[in-house]
Image (cartoon, rainbow, N blue to C red; front, side, top):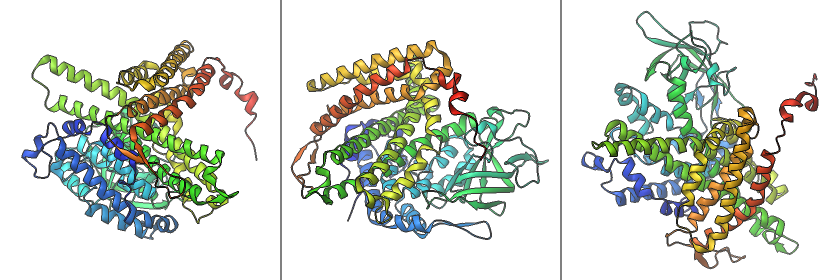
Length: 611
């Protein structure tokens, strides 16, 4: 029997290294739910045990049931029926049924709706595990943010009607945001009003009794055939920007027709739909005009963390194929992992994965603290004024940090995932290009991760402003205050030098305006991420977790064991030492002042091709 949780030393290590007990305390609101719900934990130890048991169960299900079906799912794909309904691949339906039976379809929902009320950190671990088994399945399993949005913003009546079914796995959802002409520019979702043209973007209108209806087209909708649809539409026709948009709930029914299933490069098991709403009855979520600015931005931030976790799962799966092949494939009388070029590639892959995991899990931890503190301040603030003031300050701080780390994680993990998938094919050579191995599927699945829920370029735009506003420096300085092992001092010095280079680059950018900031956003964000990851890895190398991990002996793969602390020190040393020259080069690039992208674009790129 396999297990994608217990066979991953790094996930298990981070589960023990991060203060999961503190997150449990925040999520369980000092464990007050144990008095009302028998299955709610009464203390941190009970919560941690629950988290571990669920991850172990999901790990076994992923290895033994979901992963063996992934290849057939990829080849079968989804079927659009004549009546506008969709038949998902058999393996997807079977896996969703198993996940519902395992009671993991309400990961972060409150106990009162039958949810697990787990931290987002544990949910990110779960998404990674499931994505390693089948990345396409994650696009349904990982859409639990639909239910979270309903829980956060909808009326109590709507919550009671839909959330228990989400938690039980009886329904799935979809984020119905994109329109044919709007794309990532959600502010461009069109004006409202009744229209009979079936090619028009989705429009919302009210009848004489005040009931809402939606008519028109939405495109590129993941799991658009789900039962519960959250639809972004313009409720204020006189407002052309994001303030005129509201969020609506629509149930699947005869008024929702799937007109087309997209033929995609990868994630074939995930239906991507073009939809037509035929005067579909709709219910307003929350308040008018807050659809994009508040509700969808919250929903998309959660989805971006989900895509980062999906990226981690794909990368882990691709790495394991490459490592297994490199250890067994012999060329020139030796296993190819003995060849320096291949060995170097595998090392870089492994370290990039662990750096991505460190960033993602830290992001998830910060999000848990931000949500927990905000909820406590709103619902049960301390009576003491100073304590209430401190709680508010902490809540705002975590929100700012989450606002920066979320796009950073999505950007870094998805780009890393694509590199790892590409390099895993390279390790296998010609075999990697064939369907005999899963590498080609992982590469096809990986490609979408840096596109949907906001492209890498949009993530950089979102992150760079936080980098330049001082949030990145505050995060880096906070991480630098940890207690580190003495033998890491030379690495900490390199990180300190990198921090000064970042500060100098930021000062230069500010002198040249916001347009220059956008132009050099990528190197700025790259420097900040590498510094944050460097400190996180040094923190892991200074851990108190007593954990031994195996070291391959070059033949059986089961050699001696060393402390994880020692292994993490080796990882940190290679990561920081190898990145130090790159950080200096990026900082120098930023300070060149080159603006030819603006001034000489037409001359260098030439005319638009006519044929």
